[in-house]
Image 1: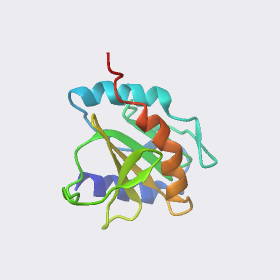
Image 2 (image 1 turned 135 degrees about the vertical axis):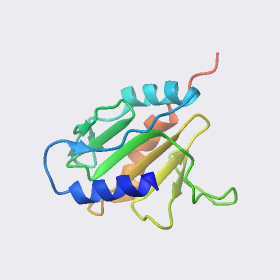
Image 3 (image 1 turned 135 degrees about the horizontal axis):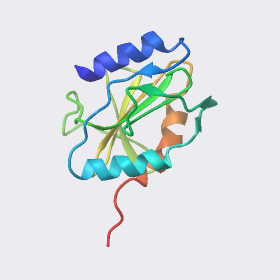
Image 4 (image 1 turned 90 degrees about the horizontal axis):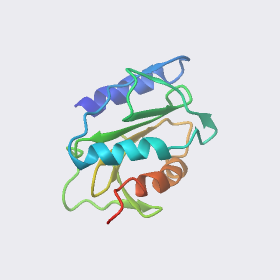
Length: 143
């Protein structure tokens, strides 16, 4: 339900300038470390859009452009994702495409779920390909 509310906010504000309001997730356990690392790996520009700001500011949220692309790290497992669902692998990362929300994708990793909303003016596969490298690098390195 929370993801649906975030998606509605993002879509409603996609055409507006300024700071975008996004509900930050509250990662737990290993997801905190992974999301903190991801925040340092994210690109400054994505699909021609510059990185913007969100409110409240959070290390677990990133937006590009006027919020047409938004990322939230450390979200809960998608409710609609069944154990038998096939993930779309892009750049070595498995992505779950929510069948009820065509603009919402979730990266499934061992340490954290990363939710990405991609506005209709962008090609989702290209955005997810660009985000797969940093998402794939966010897991702590084995010792």
